[in-house]
Image 1 (cartoon, rainbow, N blue to C red):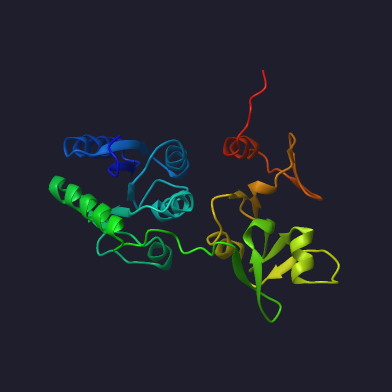
Image 2 (cartoon, rainbow, N blue to C red):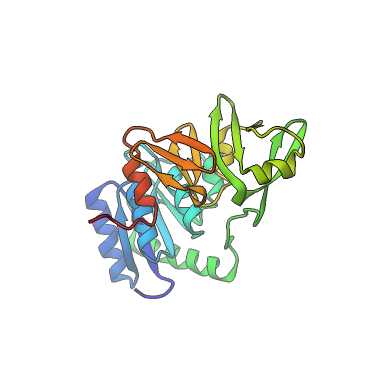
Length: 253
């Protein structure tokens, strides 16, 4: 693949996706993969070199193009170009957080497509577009009690939804650092789980709609349970395979 010109296409219209793929190849780009949904896009992203993603906003669910872009950016910060058939386009907060490099309307025009990708890659390379997601390298400050607590991200075990708030489970060491002398337990975060999850790196995995776990703290995975430090967590039905796929696993004979 040519350095700096590897494109991921996320489009659920097979015919359009193939047309985009052939167009990009003719214009000198390498297509690292074509995905129809978030899961396929993430799988391609993890297995290939991706420099830029071309994503249809209106994917045929369950996650849309913005959710797909958000998940890809957890793995690697790259420029995003959205494709839309709906105009005028209304920018919402989710979309703004992905800092899109461009928007292209359907039907796509060959030269415009190539020029916008080249421009996005150039601007990204020279720093005109953000080159890294603005995550704290060590700590994340979360609303709790009557202010904010500074939590070392690597010491977060898991996060559990609690209506409009969330329960944060830390390592015993980190809990004692923040609350010396207090009996170990969860910390009530005055923000919903989704808002916190969006600020966490790719090592954090959405096990269910109400639970996010730090894969770095997994000690054991059974047929229906997982273990991290003193915590035992049930694995939701149908989620074990996807969890195992996220781990570096040596298969049994």
